[in-house]
Amino acid sequence: MTFHDKLLNAWNTSNSLLTVGLDPDPVRFPEHLQNSPDAILEFCLGIIDATAAYACAFKPQIAYFAAHRAENQLEAICTYLRTHYPHLPIILDAKRGDIGSTAEQYAQEAFDRYQADAVTVNPYMGTDSLAPYLARQDKGVIVLCRTSNPGGSDFQFMQTADGTPIYLHVASMAAERWNNHKQCALVVGATFPEEIARVRARVGDMPLLIPGIGAQGGDVNATVKAGATTDGTGMMINSSRAIIYASAGANWQQAAELAARQTRDAINAARALLN
Image (cartoon, rainbow, N blue to C red):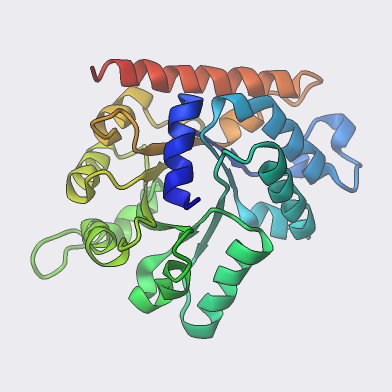
């Protein structure tokens, strides 16, 4: 099954557009995990089990694992997801962006080592930097387009010769040149709903990975109105810290479950307003 097919299936079977981001920071873990050698693994598995019923995908951010020499724990987490929740796509949030043999190694890392269904990539170095990812026709390639951070405007709003902002030029490239096998998706931040709408108008039904809900303050109703496709899907709306750190107490799993359910329900309530 391709990433695109798996994502469509997850949207339909889970009745959810929520992606749960796995950004494990040990200093924020519940006290009983603080001294465990496998704390990151234990924490992430607990979050996964608590929130999977409300998610359409999981998105581990590789930096949070690499910083703590926990890549082997990330491998175990991906194996756990494939074994226990095989219907939910794994998106490796790596934002890779290099060329040639280096890009090939990054693609191997994402798709062979971690066996992710999709990976986030930076398109700044051009088409050849994406080629090793696009060569995996069953995998998803999620391209940074209009990011949720304030500094994203430094470059993404700069205009090309025809007056098109760079982020829309990236959207067009993804839709017209890179998406031959329906592999591509775009990262567009929830903090900029007007730009979400402009990207959606340019790329049709291409999936959008939308960070910025929750801790970054993105508005659910505005996001859904701007980014939903005609069937009310089309988005992987990510929330990380607001869910996984909903509590650091003994009720941390229950709090994460409640936060995920409330976020899923808020998104679905916004979807209902589209009809």
